[in-house]
Image (tube, rainbow, N blue to C red; front, side, top):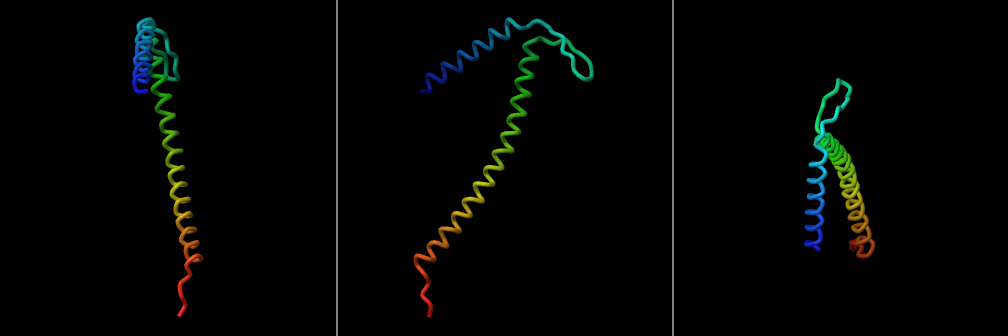
Length: 94
């Protein structure tokens, strides 16, 4: 399995190199503050990096919410198990 994943990564990296070689042509990028001429591959990589960063931040937020909910549910389960154990083995009243 590792061999297949490694091979797929090598192929993807090779395709990325080919894509970057053929897309080195400068293009005009218009943004709110003006315009700039940049190589197309730099624009593509910047857009990819920005998208990855935004999705990473959004995923972290979701991860923290799920972790907090998991802790709450584990605490609730522990309390329910404690209560159940009290019903199964009631303390002897004197």
